[in-house]
Length: 371
Image (cartoon, rainbow, N blue to C red; front, side, top):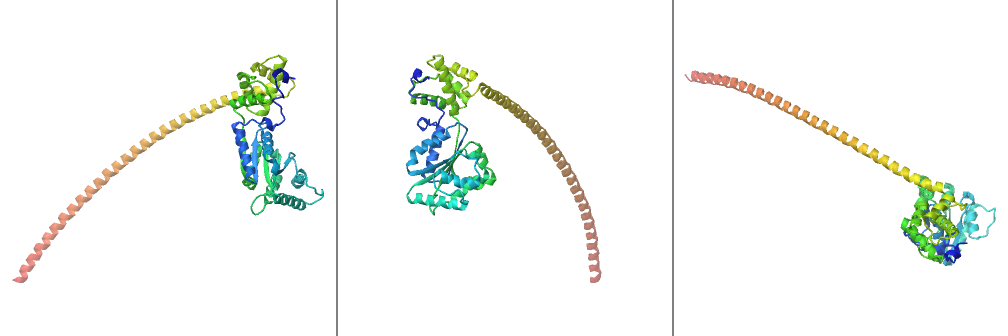
């Protein structure tokens, strides 16, 4: 509808993940590097997490387009599966023939034979499990056990689990510690910044054949504020804004067009005004909360300072009291020593007198015996 008006050869903001339109923000580039490393180095478990609409599926599809020629890949989207059915589901996704009534042990044997065959032909085998945050602990444990399918030198089956942030929370449970230890490469994909949002919009606009500057700076800022840097929401807003801009014959999309999209919604299912207002309210609440926290911190600091002053005064008072006691005890001890010394002098004088008397008696006795 608006393609010809804006000179596009195709719609630039489709919601369907398209690897050809992958925009490598710094976060997306890092995620791609981590995944490439995990697969090329034949690391057993690789994990990618991120918010809804952040671009996880687009990255995975882009990666598979680069390496899929020497790799057999199966993707499991149905994560509401029982542990007893997991192996059969994997066999189905790899298009391996089996009897529906086989036991789990037999299913594992068939899977192992398949992996050995691929290994002998020099091919890699990759199992991708999307929406993995929905998996139960029992199924995750079954997946962990698949890492035992290996030769003496390397893993026969590589597993990539992709999910929302809840997946990280789930595997941090001590019950799944063994599973978490098997994940050798992990990356959490976060939202884009304001600058990256502008680059993303410009990239997709140019890729579809549109002119640069189609979205004004104020409209990009508005889109970023509403979308919080989530690509899928950016696509929704941009596509709806182009529809509204075409209806009003606007050659450039400014913030008023974005505001109109948010306010009227138009049945497009885009980020609604209530959600936008909610975000603004959350920001206001966050600021208020920060002020409250700051006030609490100031009060706590003041209380600590008062407590410190009180402790300081108590310390000085205690110190003075101790010094007074020491002084008193010192004076008392000196007095005792003086008295003891005086008594010793009296005893000494008495002994000297007695000694003199005895000495005189001894002298007289000697004189008497000589005569």
